[in-house]
Image 1 (cartoon, helix red, strand yellow):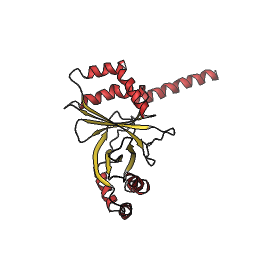
Image 2 (cartoon, rainbow, N blue to C red):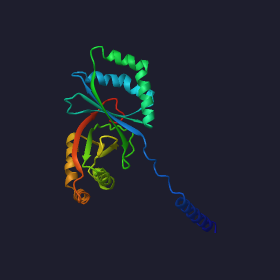
Image 3 (tube, rainbow, N blue to C red):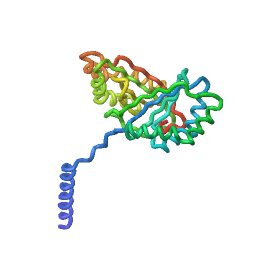
Image 4 (cartoon, rainbow, N blue to C red):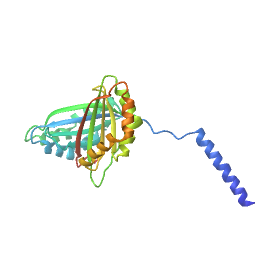
Length: 254
């Protein structure tokens, strides 16, 4: 009798919990509404190491001090232009402007900048792109692979008015097919400008492994079917750029 009552009580409790879950479904993960900024620094000849030292010893800490989030820092493997590529995030554009204003006037930054440039100017040019996370992006967060890896930044420029179709293809097919081939997702972003652009970063065990993975992806019948169906009314991507990079030793993603 006691066992029967326990079983009955357990079934009633299970039914109650099931009804409660149906009435109050789990809260979906919150949308990533942060503002992201992709910054590319072109160094004067022979000055990249000085820039990296300044970031390692001063800049990244000062960014955090003023409310900026260091997402990741990378240097292209083939780097004739002496570039540093990095991504920051902020709660919104207003926070971004306030943070950079405070950073620029910080006496600690001014001293670090002056000390690092005693042997000459370091940065020749800076490019910046403001971006929002795509709705299909994985959570963009710190991650370290002990065995090491390389990163691939890919920039797609679409034909006019084709960006929504490209995003739909990534959302419904491409991201899953990348995972199928063993590619690791770092983040997917839609820039404010230039228009019709998607920027994303993948990680691979090596550059060779990344290229092999893409060869397998392009030959996958599931990809070919998704591509052909999405391009019934014309091709989507006008230009695709790929840059293989290595993370700096101070990057939160490496």
